[in-house]
Length: 345
Length: 264
Image (cartoon, rainbow over all chains, first blue to last red):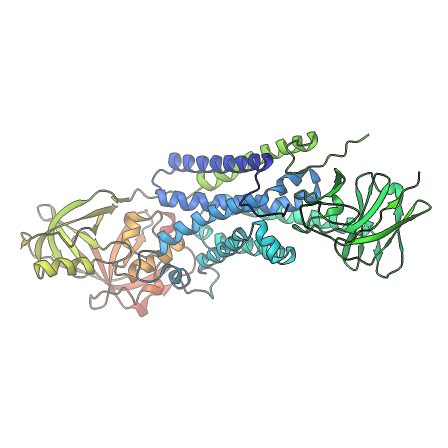
């Protein structure tokens, strides 16, 4: 949680996660280099490096883009989300090897600046078939750099979660650029149909996962309650909320989470201050609402992170009448103390 | 009662059901990694057995000629001659190196010299990336070889691709086609001789040094046609082991689709 900034706040699960990243990277490189050297030994080390890093970056990007919707569809995938930024930074570094070697190989040691060469050595911008595909890869690499450079919580806090999230949604632009880079470049020359088919399968899987996750979110929203004025609103029966868990409803497009714990009810804004995680899908752990994404915690009665942490979310008045739960949809200032509604037994 | 499992990253203990799901996911990912690695490596087009002796410096002795592009003519066996194209470092032609040599030895045109460099060779063609031109050669001699004979073979119209021979004959894998187009443009723009290559139905490749219709260098005028399938026509000549194609850039026709040499 955001008390002070360290390069990486290591813990056991992050270390295990990173070991698996390293293991998968090594497995891929070992297979790619081994198979190429055995079956196509006239290759060069430069080409091996460029191709193995480029294809590995594409594979990692597909995995990264799958994690978000997978975690939405099934909460058991949330551990994959927990340290996704390390996977993202790893993918950027591998893409950088691909881009750096390609620029060195194809554009450096020449009669013009290599970056200028990337944009001008092929000027067929109006032709799809002859399009300068390297430009697309270069732009994608810039986006991946911006994302990797701002991946630390320092930037998350200073750019605001909303701006940070918007910046990091550019990963979809990067994905589109990379797919175009590959289809207008390598696949114009490599004759095997299996590579584009595999990329196509990857695309279809991503689309299906995102649509499935979207449908689930829409269904969840429909199960919640709409309210927009300042009157007390009936939400649900007390028994509909599980112990130490919450129920979420919507007011003016903002989600509110009502938590039930220790015979009490408290309501807070559903959005975690860290990365916008859904607090209402979290759980009360050690008396604190705990975000399912990265474990950020808030006290239910005031929406404040326990000292010494400083994050705060808005709170709401909540009451119980005849075992029915009501909420006053007007948000209070972030961190405002609100007496929990007591559940009479 | 159903156990309400909840994962928190910074707590070491992972709930059992979540742990089982993660183990299953890891195995799926192992499978995905293997499939991607196999498909992207095994199904690559075959690379050519061209060679670039990057770490080995050789010395060749022969008669220097600057036209149509700088080369050294060597005698392989009686009346059998080979022209070794000269290249500079990186994506440059040999002009700077020849300038260095001639600043020490005056003109070396038609003289016998020993030049050091890294050999590049494939399919009967040899090129040399000049090394140490500030020190070598240390002397020039009168040529021991007879005058060159350039045979005129008439007009020709042929389809293929303009490539830079440095990459095509050894430095890059592959050194042709769309992937390599930008690099070929840089190389030819930097003074490396443009070469036209084509492939017959039988699979035999031929290579042509390209000049303008008067036999002059054509590097900059041909840049927009480099690395693409084109049809060219012009006067065909033969100089020892090389064809020379003299053409007008205006006569070059861009073709749609992949170049025939992609199947090399």
